[in-house]
Length: 129
Image (cartoon, rainbow, N blue to C red; front, top):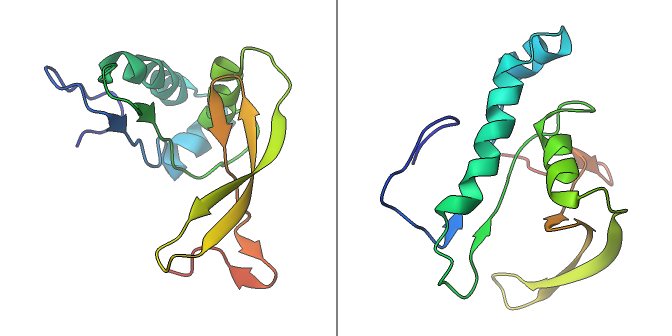
């Protein structure tokens, strides 16, 4: 495990999962014009793909995080990996632990598939923990 800006030499994992790339503090700094942390985080995300094991059948970088505001690092990912293409929307069906299947709305921006949720949906917290 490593944080933003960290390096992992010699490893070529099948999947990399950056979780919460930027902090609330980094977001507040960027909103007032101090974008150095945001730019460093954006640059770091570009390097992750080169670290993957390209021989793995399903190699991927799975970004997880809080979209703080327009033009944060998650918007940057959509732009960078979306190549200016309009997003395509569809329903993704995935298996869940109890054997049922769940259908989720997703968008594809170039090489990036995005699943987004609101903090509250139908009066319930999306992540109550």
